Amino acid sequence: MLPDLDKIKGVHPGAVLKRALKKGGITGSDLARTINEHKQTISAILNRRRAINVKLSIKLGEVFSVEADYFMLLQASYDVQQQVAANYRRIPNLNHFRKALFWDTQLEQIDWDKNKRAVIQRVLERGNGKEIQELLAFYGRQTVKKIVQSIKKSYLPSFEENLKNYNLIE
Image (tube, rainbow, N blue to C red; front, top):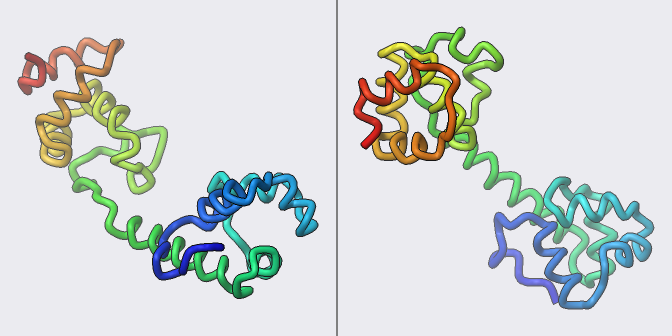
């Protein structure tokens, strides 16, 4: 028996499906054969790398004795939650950073939380005072200090100089 949709809104359908398969002692390959679908497709869904489509939602609804739109509604709920989270993603004031500092990517495309360590290292190695100040304002001095401790090696002497100049080492 699958959980009520209201209780699991925002959960990836693959997670719900994985739990249901585990409870029923069914493998992803068994499910793929049952619904005449590629096992790679089922694997990608179970591992949250792929979304549920309408056709698959109908097939899964039949197998698990739920409404045909159960998995589609779950997918829509998950997609909405992901978009809301993306809309509220924090970013620093990009006007304080030179495009040349991040020559290998576009400033607007940087995931400032996911790539925190690399961003901090890059700015402390190659950034000017304005960029370092914005970095400290965005992440906070304590966070930057903590990340700096995990950076084992920097090839640029400016990194060490900036650590001292901005009191980021103990």
